[in-house]
Image (tube, rainbow over all chains, first blue to last red; front, side, top):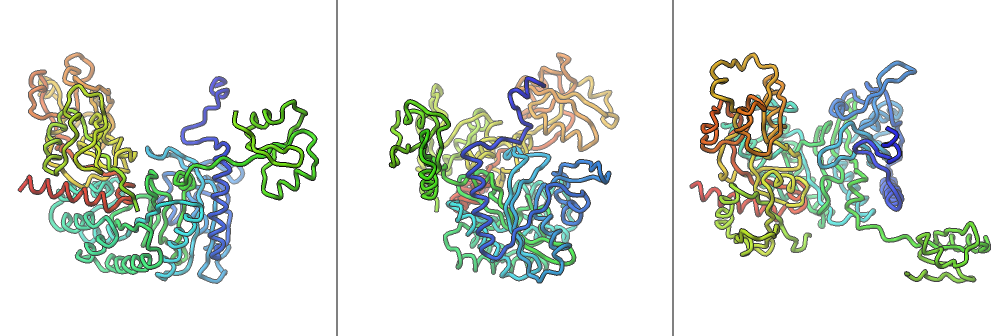
Length: 381
Length: 222
């Protein structure tokens, strides 16, 4: 115990973020939220912890198994630590902001905590930033949030973005038609999640044909749409397909450089989504940068939005360049410091008199040195 | 979007390699000469296709390399896919090579007097602890797994456990060690495994490779 605490071991999936990464993350968060705000999305900040039944009620049931629970000693009720912020924002919209005119545009940024990381993403605590557009079922709303996601990711400098468009309701509609069990852990669900075409073919009959065709359709958007058109789908699924086709056309026109793929069987991480959804990827970054889509915000309202995972977004960025820091030797006039900071310098002031200011500047990781009115670069040793 | 970036294919050593190399040849992919040199220490090889490189790893590691995106595609037995159950791997194609089956086996004598319906807890030696646990859990039996990396067939006779879960091709090793197959868990073949992110971000290239593999496999079957 004492030995571990001396060595600062943290629980699995939790970490200290050190310089310069912590500053980079904070700046990325600010930039993202600023681009949301510029499009009229107003920021809300829900609490870290709330009562279990409001956090996990309704659409929240899908995230119940990733939520930390604690007992509230005051009310003696169970509370949950948020595993995701979307549902909290939906709750705010449904309750306290119920009488604000629709469509309602809200954004947020904050930390979330999950009971388990995944094999590929051990982080249990990470920052999310996102927007919710509540009370509009319009296709223009879908387009607005996808374009906003692209714009905000590009504003922090994510290169080679690509978007996977998903229809999480199509497979359930098809399976209901065929009388197939699709609950979590059901074989069909697993086969589809792993795109195991062999096992799907093994189902035989109509199921193998339709599900096999859906699996096969996953890929570049134009090819996928062409293949999807040929599949006979039940009515609600066919409507979703039409919506997707419209969105692809308009996205192509509005953002021609973005990679677009379609995956009609993707279901992962759409725990509460109920319509056209999307996942953001960047070339060579393991796993998704974020995801979003349509969901039910309660009170019969439909909403769409997206969530970005800051840890993944940062992984997509080029490495941070070294910050320029200016060393102010002992007894540098205070006014000079003020002037230089106004010019954009980060200053590090000496606390004591030193013999060789340049050596001291180098020791403290400063790139520049103040010397009698001038700023000079610190020579490398 | 992506400039001429390499696609890396993870290839398992051993049994599957012998069948995978002819398959690649039918695809028009010939590995560089060093690949066939048994003394080479090289682990990554170029091929006749300028965008495709091969890496050679242990069969259990093929899935891991693909799951983490270190290799974009791989040839992976579905025994390995089932054991790791990586959410980041798609297996869109059965390559029709590496045929065998994954079975539960036990000593002949035990088989005659045993009633599986009464099991509550079994001790099993296996290379596949996670898959074995899931298999027995699905029928309400708790499996205490002993992870071994080889010579599984020895375990029951040495008193390490009563049963084993292992791959069987002909059944000869089982017979020679006095074991009988009591249950088949799955038929095993090698699959084309694809990294999920690669399929989304390098969709065109990866889909083209998938089509190429599919055409070759279909032509072989026909």
